[in-house]
Image (cartoon, rainbow over all chains, first blue to last red; front, side, top):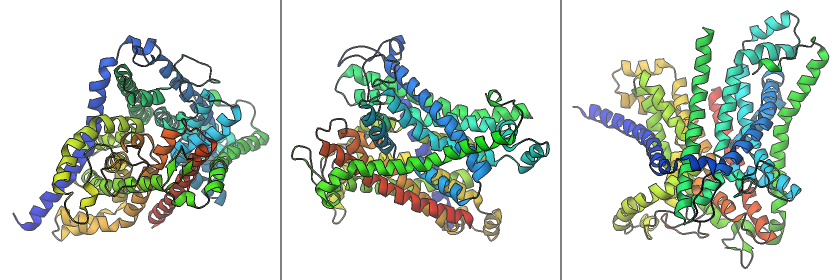
Amino acid sequence: MTRRQFKNHVFKGLCVAATALGIGILLLILMTLFQKGFAGMNWALFSEVTPGPGGEGGLANAIVGSLIMTSLGIVIAAPIGVMAGTWLAEYGRNSKTADLIRFLNGMLMSAPSILIGLFVYEMVVVFMGHFSGWAGAIALAVIALPVIISATEEMLKLVPTSLREAGAGLGASRWRVTFSLSYRAVGTGIVTGILLAIARISGETAPLLFTALNSSFMTINPNEPMANLPVTIYKFAMSPYESWNQLAWSGALLITLAILALNIASRILPGLNKRRAS
Amino acid sequence: MMKATIVTAPTSTNGDAVFQRICRASAFLIGILMLGIMLSLIMGAWPALQHFGFEFFTSAQWNPVTEEFGALNALYGTIISSVIAVALALPISIGIAVFLSELCPQNWSRPIYIGIELLAAVPSIIYGMWGLFVFAPWFSQGFQLWAGQHLAGLPLIGGMFQGPPMGVGLLTAGIILAFMILPILTSLIKEALSTLPNVLREASYGIGATQFEVIVHVLLPAIKGPIFGALILALGRALGETMAITFVIGGAQSISSSLFMPATSIAATIAEQFNEATGALQISSLIGLGLVLFMITFIVMGVARILLRRSAQQ
């Protein structure tokens, strides 16, 4: 083997090793979660509320709180995000204003989520005078918004101009074209973007720490501090109590499986649609 | 789902104007939000900035009892852990991107790439738990013990590896961060590789170059710009990472020359202390830290975006 061939083999080996490392980390994390979290997977996890220090219980209130805040967050963010994305793709297009908004949207998307928490703390929590599920939901909405905007815009950009022209040629007004043609053509893509936004916010911990806070009670009233999975996991994982640690691992497994499922669903969804269309 | 929203009323130019206005208002909301975040941070930080003056940015004091607060410790931990992360993640992600787009058979490439992308979907707090309870013990028994015996005595770099093998600390935080930014780096580099014309590869292989020579001497130099842009973008991501760091950095308000010692970062300090803060001055100082983080990430991300856009235009 010549020196050049040898170098080539070493190089290829290193690339394979790097890939194996990346996949290996994912598998290691999933393995740990199953190993430590699976033991706590029982009915009580979903039916009982979080216990006091050292006690036995479940995560029912945290699961319900997370579901409520994530849903509220998406209900706030989705319509605004889709319309903002529509403006960028259909009306603003290449104007200077649209470019600026695109830039700011990118900045908001990459802003550290803890800063969103601080912002909502000052705007909502200080204003209301107390921590609340609403504050948590708003913080999550601010994080979901830029994801939905950019997904919507990317999707609408795929709509061929000829389709819009065909609609306009039939005498449809612009918004009619947007609703009946553009949204229909790329609707699945937009829904995929929203799914990814849900996946993104359902694991967020930092923005909830000082907006929704946490709670050991079952509540469905977003005017009160609300229990949620991420903050509960954080608190329980860092505690010295074994039963709390176990619940933290079970919660971690639960949340990761949900997020991975959402991610995989968002990959399968567009494919399904294509198959149906053809 | 979309069907329900179709309005069946006769089309009118009026509706058009209304819809356009609502859409525009939604888009402008982004500008208002960014401005709001900046203003609320400045306003919240104002009492602390007024009290400490410029020293807030240069002081390494962080003492809630005597109410003395400075950003330097947290700033140091934030920057060093992020730089470690980027330095570790770059070669690995180049390796993965090269493997996926140049070496691996096509039908294998996609599932492996999805696996790498799922790494980005795992929430920050899960990395934190895994880092603290699985990685840190293993790291302290393995690398840290070994480094303590073999590297700590070396001149120049020896100081970086001194101290007890605790598992948590600046280096651990950097490593966990590296795993977290791996997917974004990989996907940007892979994308850059895919934009290169095939002629480049064919010409190089045509004169008898090996894969190593084609990739290292031809392809990678051709995407230097995008790789640098991706690097800065990943740095921006790492700077603001919160929960994972809170778990593994050790939470110590100090600056040490050793990478094994516990430290803290801006985001971790805010996450740990905000709810326990006793005085208005501490709250304001924590928001001041947030303002510093906001400015750094804004500048870093702005530079990254401009770099990436410029290389995309070429």
